[in-house]
Image 1: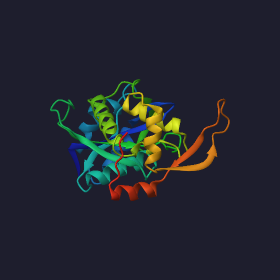
Image 2: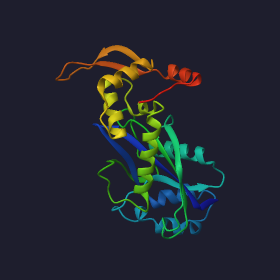
Image 3: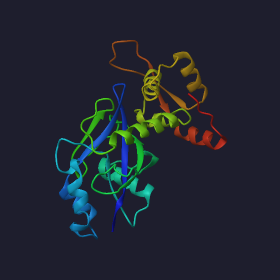
Image 4: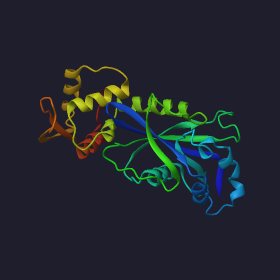
Length: 248
């Protein structure tokens, strides 16, 4: 059974060319109907499909998500949505909040539990979801026509990301396996929306012991090749247990 009054939506952030992007989709009504109705009749979700502009026209886009089946828990279903739509299993996922304004969905009262996820568009080869007719990255300040209160949800998710990134090194999820300190600083500046002092930033980051010097440098660059680093996940988990004080 599908809970028509509860949906799970994922704000998927990516970082590319010093810009924050968000992944949006246009679902295929026929495929979505098949996906949602393993135990349901079409008439029970007809209103959901016919009332959603992103399922009727190519002029609108929406967040990747669906209504919640009764047999699924929230966090597990959010992970399933991500895996189904991106083909990726190991993704950083965090719940943002529940959106429940009475008029947010005009054709039905819907509470939406929103999550945000972080992936690197260059590192992951995203596959077109079997539920979608289109999946596309958009710069966060150059959004297309979006449905309902999608803009508010994205803004709240970005606010949550900005809070989290100052105390936990989650920004590394948006980087390739090997990166320069300049690339790392640019990422944090874009997320936080402010310029950081280069000397202080590098001092703080290197003092934490979370970076591994790969003994490699950039190749095929016009400027002086910079050192490449990687993120030490094992050290991070160890320090987290000991009470890591990560503050940008």
